[in-house]
Image 1 (cartoon, helix red, strand yellow):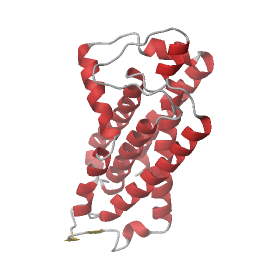
Image 2 (image 1 turned 90 degrees about the vertical axis):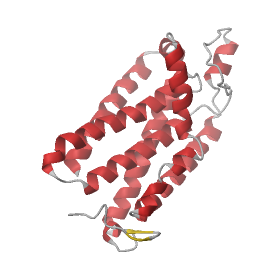
Image 3 (image 1 turned 45 degrees about the horizontal axis):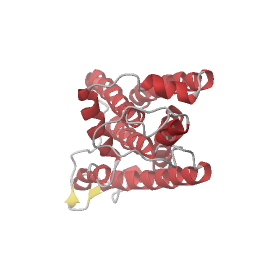
Image 4 (image 1 turned 180 degrees about the horizontal axis):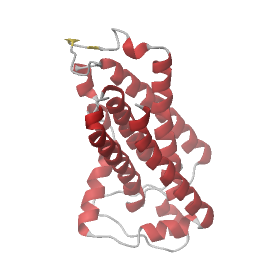
Length: 229
């Protein structure tokens, strides 16, 4: 599992370091304007709809199929999302940071808008949508790595890890593209969303709950589809 999950973690680490350097070197306003310097009808349509996957109830419905196989993963996902929600909401109310729309309005700068997207003005830091994207895709990565150990499928698994982390970052970028968040908001949200599932998984793993019968039963009877070999 460690070798396969390392691909996901490796990309996350490299991008996190790169973003940290960018945030340290450039002002957040400059970074936001650079990221919003290009808009196309296709990207407007793509990110307007893609960002909705991190909104209730879509991200909840997405994990429900696991109830038919190993409901324990649904429990872990639910705990990770609850921890994520508490962390992001607490930070939002502590910092009460203005969103790009309000920040640039005070500077007299008009941001490009996307039809159908209502811009919010407060509680920008951190990005809850980005954190939700990372909780979901990190949990998916852990799920695949834990059960699929066939060396012949190693390349397929590594490819899946890369695709999952790309999809997570696409969710984060959608928040910048739609001018709902700054890069610093997305940066912090990605870290929170990455850490929470890892903490929950480590807890379950150390307690050996992943091998317990209650963890590996569905809510509709035992199903061995994900049975470890």
